[in-house]
Image (cartoon, rainbow, N blue to C red; front, side):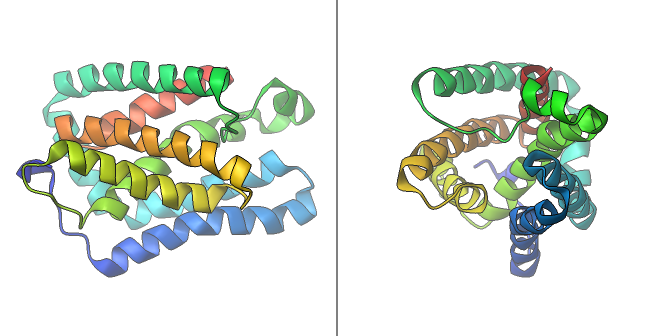
Amino acid sequence: MSEQSLSSLSLKRIIISVLLMFMIPVSSHFLNIYLRQEYLSLACAMNIFCGILIIYDWNLFGIHYNRSKDNLFSTLIYTFIGAIGIYFWIWFCSEYMDVRLLIADETVFSSIPYAKPALLIAFSFMQSALFNIEFKCITDHIHLENHDLLMILLSGIITGIVFTAAFTSFDLMIWIPAFTYYAVLACIIALLYNMSHSFIPGILAMGIVYLIIML
């Protein structure tokens, strides 16, 4: 990664940030006992713990927001490029791989119409912020000088493993496609980060694509 994109997150901050992510499926499981609606439970947990994560990592978020704001044209360009890449990757997965995306469909919206705004927010920009912030935290201490492509690949693999472990059941036939999806998605995010030195284009690109799919 470029020197400009490096940071020095403490090990404590990284561990707490990752634990906050794992609290989403755990708390969603317990919420579902009472709500008896899987997507609503997951959306509630996503909104709550992603909100906590953003607040906890507010300084980190602010650094990347300022970088993005100071280079607005680049942010827009890389957001557009990232959105196209993510959209076609999702299309490929839906056509040729059995991957369960963390999004709500029309069946879910029709069964709980009162919760549509919360579902849209949770599974678009909250999930996108979660993915991008966790990507940064997970890979922050991994630096391979002058090996950007290897760094992107390694970042994708590590992030893919962590997210698959958090949000996928331990069934090999489900785990492998999910890992492939998350790993390639993380590689796209890593590429955007490497070019823009900010995770804001990744958040915008992923959030916009997920929102469009649900709408």
